[in-house]
Image 1 (spheres, rainbow, N blue to C red):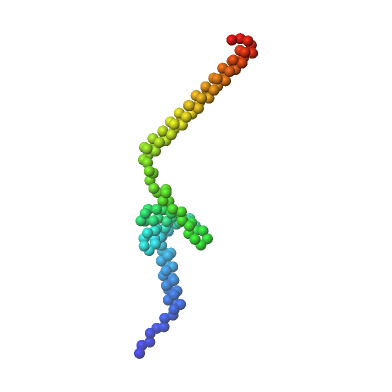
Image 2: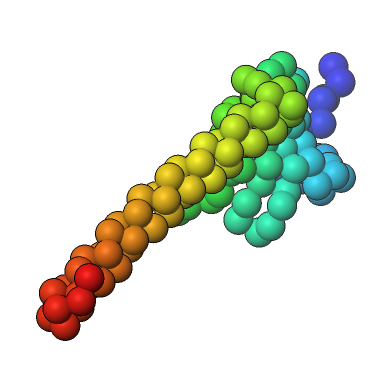
Length: 131
């Protein structure tokens, strides 16, 4: 009868830990989850970028205490509802409307000033008795 060598459980655990540690150390600065949905890229000591490979959404994740808090970029990634030309036209129309409003206010102020000057002339003529 042959005797099998005795396997020491602590030695097996140490070998497994070293193998896992070597695999983690060999990973680049970015890592993927097992299903390939997310990709992580280290930005700073406490911040990573998370890319959702299916939707293209990018999240900035910060380590706060024991939690990873992520802020998504879904609003920033959406294209504007209007084209660049439409946005320029809207801006030009808004500027034109503002200029027209200012011109109307200026005209109203000038009419009020003219009226005040006429009233002062009338007071001066009444005071001096001239017409």
